[in-house]
Image 1 (cartoon, rainbow, N blue to C red):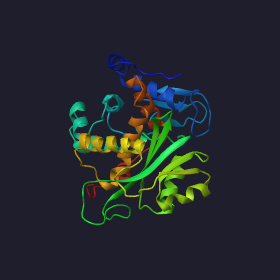
Image 2 (cartoon, rainbow, N blue to C red):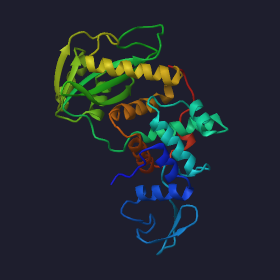
Image 3 (cartoon, rainbow, N blue to C red):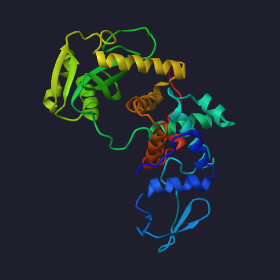
Image 4 (cartoon, rainbow, N blue to C red):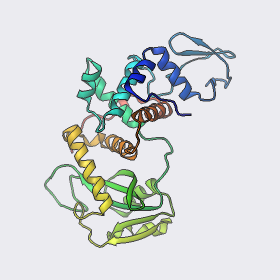
Length: 306
């Protein structure tokens, strides 16, 4: 059963102590009861500070071990507050905003936390889109010199896949690709769309291989100029994505971090109809437990701004 606070007051009352946060993680990590990671035994003694000692082999496991919170030097209460704030802000937050709301002394800490949490926004083994899917590529970034359209240089291509449900936008998937070649586009669709689905695209020849991969490929627009007159559902998502990147991050998104921002936008968009912000908090903590450790050196450094 999903268990999460419904309001800010409930959140503050429930997670007022470290012990309460440890207990919440325990239930998410071991929903059927403790299991020793060393010998598989199901009984343990509870020790101070979120540590559990196996009753058989005496192996000690911290409740945060093997999660995104592993080795943190900050209180778990602060992490929970960061997650609550991140998921309850309609358009998200940047590192400076998180630093201010949590009172963190180091901007780099807030920046690193946000990127770790963005990684947790992708659920391992998540379902692919199905049914009717509109797919197209767009480039993200400001106007740059060089060739325009497909094959443009100095621009970042992203494949946008949109599920169409009763004429409305359903779930989405976003995938950065190196180019608009057949292998790149086919790889993006294979990762994001269930075989047997109908994939609607424009007339770009490099989509023709989708039929061979088990998709029903329908060409509904002959024009192939990227960035203009795109498929209607894709066009709407692209417009929201670009507005979100510009409004929340003031265009300060670096190429090496783009995938994380795309994951965050997908997480938010696919849960846009949720009436409970608390449920988003629950989902993100749940996925942070399932993801595993993310070390600071795994987060790429700065590079060219889009």
